[in-house]
Image (tube, rainbow, N blue to C red; front, side):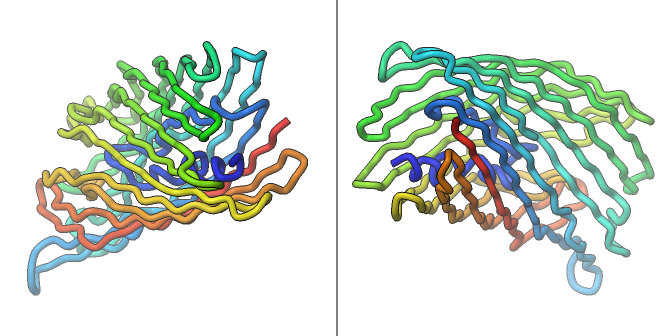
Length: 348
């Protein structure tokens, strides 16, 4: 069942949040803390959006090109089993981000681009009370930075330096190893009062709190059912520039669902298939993130190379929900994302 777990529940870490609501990118998973023994992991994801929109109708319509630049996601983690009851982990991810570039001649937002990037480091410890119950918790530091360059309704550019903030992570889990059952809940707190100095206006924000629920269980010989629910409190979130006001804001919390099945094919090879869903709000979206919900499909596989080395990968197709943008009422329809993920894990 070990290979099935990797190809199923754990593989989703590389590409689960390929195009989620708000600025979510990594999903802030802590699955490495539940792995057996000592483990080092390296993950890489390449995400390619196809995101176009139209403003106006008939001969007056203006169509954007693809405003979603491709981007990559990196992640690393190490987990050490200190003794039978205590384990610790250090996780690096890129939890939040956004990138948009309007460079189509004639479109009302031509010349507008924006980018938000972040780095996160999470230090965790886990204590197991017995073979069934455990708790985990620790601290998470997130460091965002960005640039905002807009041409409409007026020209304005500001590049923001990085700032860092610290929040906490706490959770618990119930497990039954005889049937590969695990039910884990993890809460991540807000990271408040981030202040990024800008070349024009300064940027301020508070990163939202979230809850991850992860579930898996064996349903037949060599077959695993797995799933996750992620809630993020995006309602009330804003990126506020001291010179021009809110450059990005959200009015709704976001819940993202995933469910899938993993299957061990032989002692070395296993595979998985999963479906993701995020409901649309129906509200107008910002021009820097013109999507509203999604449904996704992912194929995954893992191969045990021996000597503690395992390689896994996934291909994910995301059908983005249609959106109407605020202010200019541009329509973004029939858009999608393709994401490819790769993970190398070494157990020692």
